[in-house]
Amino acid sequence: MYSKVLPEFERMLRQVDCIYHSLDPRQVMIFEDLMVVRRWFTQEEICSACRKLAEIHAIII
Image (tube, rainbow, N blue to C red):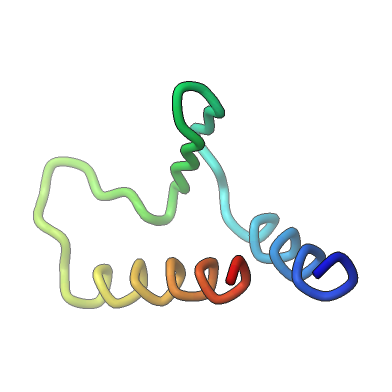
């Protein structure tokens, strides 16, 4: 966990811009490349967001 998972998670997080985070009342992180403002998501954007979330989920588990 400490020698493989956490360093890989840190590497991934450094590749994206985190525009907001909070620990209270819940742990939240919002990444700039996952946001779309005032329009519908495209299929490509949805797939990209799902891939990124799956990578983070795989590292955490």
